[in-house]
Image: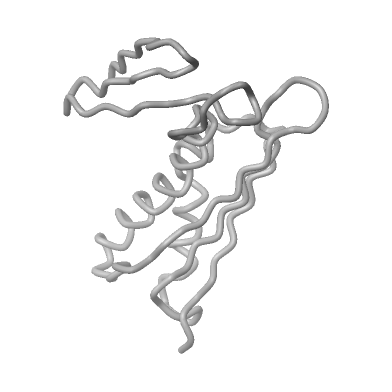
Length: 137
C-alpha cells in the first residue's frame, strides 16, 4: 500500500507528498476554473499519469525481451467535458516508438500499453484511445 499525504495551501493550491521518496508535487486549479494555472491541475496529473504508466509497462515488457525503447515519447491530449458536471471527457495518447512497425515484438508492446493500470482504472465514459507512431524501417 502507498500513502500520499495532501495539504491544502490556500488559493486553490495543494501539495502532495509521496511517502516512500519524500518527493512532492504542487497542484493549482486551472485558469478556466478559478485558479492560477501555475502548476499541473489535478486532472492534468491524470493526463500525465496515463502516458508515463503506459511507457513504464511497455518498458517492463521491452526489458524482458531485451528491446531498447530509449527515446520513446508520448503525448496525451486531455479534453474536459463541455456540458454537465466538470470531468475528463477524453485522454488521447500518441506513443512515438523508436522501433519499426515490423518489429517482432510490436504486438506484445502494444498489448502491454493497454494493460497499464492507469488506463484500466479510467471510467468507461472517458474516451482513451492509444495510437502508436513507428519509426521508418
